[in-house]
Length: 321
Image (cartoon, rainbow, N blue to C red):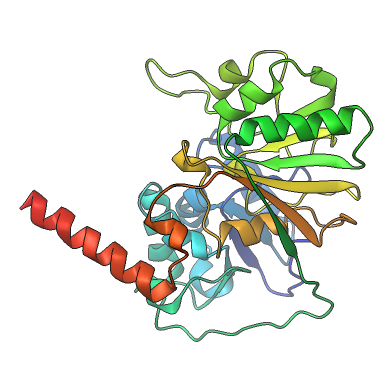
């Protein structure tokens, strides 16, 4: 249960909202939903409002316009705060919005299960005290590396085992490439497949929607839809959502020829490890990947990697000048 039991009115700001049982304020929702939200607020003594990062500004303005002192009367929880750093470049508008408005609240908490290194914490929140919560009953997760020259073939081989009854459980593949998924599922029975990804209904001129890439036989699903034997997830479901499947087996797929599938070990891979909440296989995660023949294969330390990256950054800047 992602909801926090609090006795004061609260705003919960999530990276995504995949909850059917609540009203949510979304940046693209019609204005009439703002009215519905406001009427619901008036009928409850303690209010709990869920918003995405993108729609936090819209919510605050709605409350202020109706003479509600949101900054003093509401508590703000910003979920998955590490994303404020990880997504700063390509979601700068939403991130800057969260940082700007969260500073105005009398009480605010930034929460994550995967904190980033202190030196990378954004300056807007670097001054805040850090509290580490030690959870009881935690289990150690073992990562099983599957090194291959062809990640897609390995995925197909695993699927064949499951279909032929030679592997127990449901397969959950986390791979941030709709094109990769489309190739793998092309000849699979649709009733066995569930794909969770962004719908991107307006991809821009000359670009296909994700549904077009997958084909009409494989409609884009949500994590709240029924689990199937074969399940695929892009980054839209790597964080901020819960998946329930007692028989779920997790496979993370990285293909060095598709850069968007290469994941941060300290945050995204850890987040994926915890997506399926109740699986009896949750102590073992499989990582399918192919190696790159370069300096990274020498397994450098953090200090060596940092020095290497800073040197390359300096060379790039010198070249531009």
